[in-house]
Image (cartoon, rainbow, N blue to C red; front, side, top):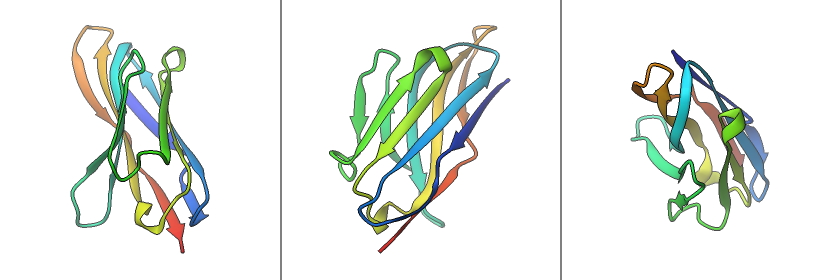
Amino acid sequence: QVQLVESGGGLVQAGGSLRLSCAASGKIFLINTMAWYRQAPGKQRDLVATITRDGDTHYADTVKGRFTISRDNAKNTVYLHMNNLKPDDTDVYYCNADVVTSTLHKVDSWGQGTQVTVSS
């Protein structure tokens, strides 16, 4: 019904920047909160940032001042601008969306993940 496709991950040196994108497609009526999570192998998935449909944002303390989440409601897309990256930011990043489908069902959707690697 709903697909989330992430892009923009890769390898970057410490202090560098990356921008992640996540586009939602399918039978979408509207999308409420969108978010980015990250997860290291063998560890729990941690919240990075959220953004409501109206643009209210929330960030994990570890990324405040360095990461910015934004969205384009017309494109059903959420972005994560990551600046001053650190080796500890190395993880697989996942997009999440609280979707209301065209049949008015709520679906908690996840992307497939994109690897971000920060070298020291």
